[in-house]
Length: 439
Image 1 (cartoon, rainbow, N blue to C red):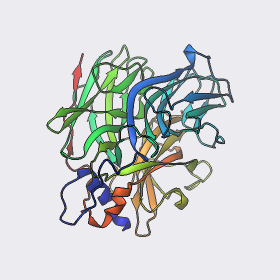
Image 2 (cartoon, rainbow, N blue to C red):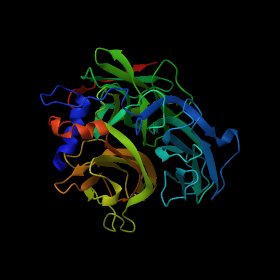
Image 3 (cartoon, one colour):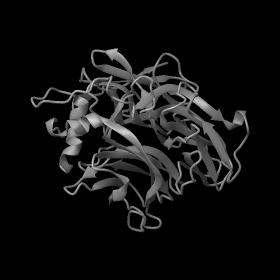
C-alpha cells in the first residue's frame, strides 16, 4: 500500500475509466470537510490605514469568518498573504488561531527595513479570526485573503479537492517573452486534459527576477486587477512567494490566469506549479486538515536534521515526525525559511521520489533571511514513513521549516483505494505554452 499512495493521487485527478467497480459519491452525499474555497482577492487589514505599526511583541487580531464572502461558520483555516512593511529590525511574524497558545513557529521572517510577503495557511480560532504576533521588531502589516479550507459545517457550495505534486515549471520569461514591463500583465495559460475533474485554482510559486524598480506582482483571474499583492520586491532583488490563484476556463481544456506587474520598472517572472485544486463529481482527491503549528526542521539546532547548514549543490533528506501524519497523508503545508546564506542561492523542496524538479521555493540573498509558504508532497517508503527533500544550489544555508497543515485522502478516495489504477506521473495530461504579455 505505501508505494501506491502517489500513484493513486495521480489517478484521482486524472479521473480516467477503470474496469473495477467503484463507489461513486454524489455531490449530495459529499461534505465540505477539508475542501478549498477560492475567494475574491481581498485586503482584510492594512495597519498603515488603521492602527499604525504593530509594536515589538504586540499582536493583531484579523477576523476571517463572516467577512469577504467567507461564511460565518464552517471555516477550518485561512489562506492569507501576510506582508511586513518597513520593519524596525530583523524579526518575524507568528500566525496562529486566535484563542490558542502562541506556537514557537514563524510565518514571515524579515530583515530591518524590509517590505515583503509570505503566504500562510493559518488555522482559524473559534471566534473566526487569526492572530499575528510580532517578534523582535515593530512593523506595519497587511493581510490579503486568498481563500479558505472548510469544515463539514460549511453548507455553502461544495469546495475543491487538492492534488499536491512535485513542482512543474509553467513559464520563465527569461526563456520566452523577456521581462514583463512595468504596468503590464502576463497571461499564463495551460492545458488540463481531463473533462471530468476540472481545475478551479492552482498553487504556484511566483518569482520576480531582477526587478528594475520597487513594486509588486499580483496573480489573479478575471478582467480587473485586484488591489492586493502576491509578491513584493525591491530594485534588483529576486524574490519568490507561494500563492493560490483562481483559474479561468477558456474552453477546450485550456485554463488560465494573469500576473500583473505593479512596478514602474520591468521584471522577469518565473511561475512554478505546485498543486492543483479541482472539482471532481466522484469525490476522489485530497482534503486539508489542520495540525498544531510545529517546527519540524531547524538545522541551526539539529531539529529534524543534523546540526549543520546545507552545503552547496547538496540535498538534505528529512523524515517528518510520525505523529504528524496518518496512513493516507500525501503532503504538508507551512513555512520554509533560509537563514544566513553564505552566497546568493535558491532552495527547492520536493518529495525525493524523482530527481530535483528544476523549480525553486526560496530565492536567497547572501547574509539575509527569507521565508516563503509551501505546499509539498512527500516520498513514502514500504513502512509508510514520509520523507522530504531540500536542495541548496550555492554556498551554505541553514533551513527552518514549520508545518501548519497536511493533505489526506478524501473518504471517497479511501473507499475506492483497491480499485484505482496505478500511474507514476501526476503531471500527465498537463502542458503549458509560453505566456503572452498584455500592455
